[in-house]
Length: 198
Image (cartoon, rainbow, N blue to C red; front, side, top):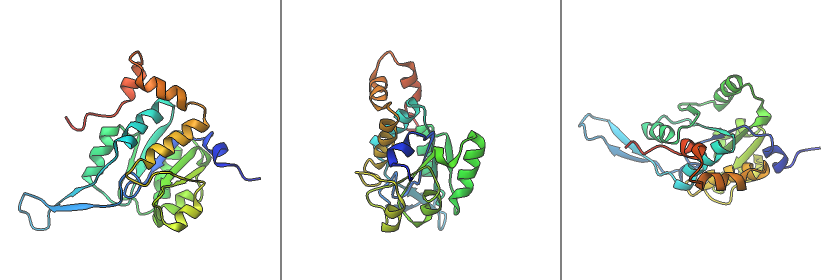
């Protein structure tokens, strides 16, 4: 008998995200670098504050979070540092390699990993992980492989949807929400995101 999405979510210890189209809306802005070097460029992406807050909430709920993306971008590296992500893998053409490294490092099984994706490159992980989550704007094949589809699109709070689904299934969402806003919570202050490079 196959497990429900809620039953799968109860077992999750690590939550992994694709970046473009999941933590962003998929648009990539490329500008010429001011250095004057031919071919040099600056890449920009937009991230949603709700997703950022959800990383802190996930951490309070006992989850570890990370990203696995095919592209390599200093913009993504900066955001990952800002969010204090536990796992950051860029330049990953075959994402299961990163997943296997995380499994070995954390001594966990595939059943304890959730993955949020939107495109074909995410399918190898989504087909085998414990909880496969597709964002609202995912390709049809990705939605078909998912146990859950988020209410919001990538770059518009889909990451928050994923975190809240898992925490709700684990029975910690209400506590995490209250802990996150408690002035007495040292854990909440430590779990919070970075300072945007300030």
